[in-house]
Length: 221
Ligand code: ATP
Ligand code: MG
Image (cartoon, rainbow, N blue to C red):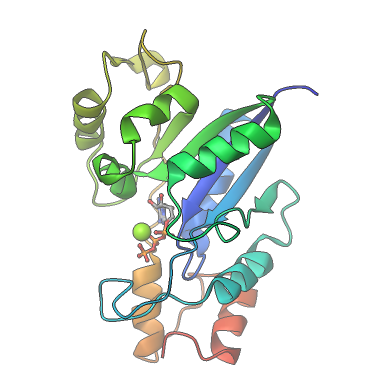
């Protein structure tokens, strides 16, 4: 089996939106990935799961929306790996399982928005992550790229930046941190949930099929 380049896009996806799709499209083109796996987190529903007093939608709903959003894209795959384990699911465990399953026949690239990356120091065993995978850090409106560099220098050993390919590398671990500037897409799931709650239009923020699903299932109201 030839080594495949696989991008992993983890998230809550409550709901998946056009920002996620823009990220996937950008990286698959820029970095020539063979596939992108969308990995929804199996967060247990609890009051204030989103930090705004709201519960996170069931895994079933979030998967159903991903299926509708990704239907047209043969290179996009939905991974249910995190629901097969007991929650909470940590990225380090997910990555180790995927590497075992692929028996080393894949180069994994963990795709992450700048907002989420700035909190990486709160992740379980985060210092080990770049010994296992590469990172692709995507710009996101409101999160300065300088801060991303600070986080890399502060948490991972001996990383230096090469401007010609916008990549951080180190002698100590094989994982790279690849910076990707994307045309800003100011869309978030938080904003979509808020709009639905207020009865506002979400056309253009999510695929039509996802909008229909949200309405039919009365999500976020
Ligand atoms: P929420 O508002 O509920 O946090 P979200 O829009 O941030 O939702 P997540 O499911 O948390 O969506 O995001 C999954 C991943 O996609 C994260 O790494 C996040 O940074 C990235 N991402 C989401 N939306 C965008 C966007 N518009 N531009 C760049 N990256 C994004
Ligand atoms: Mg988020």
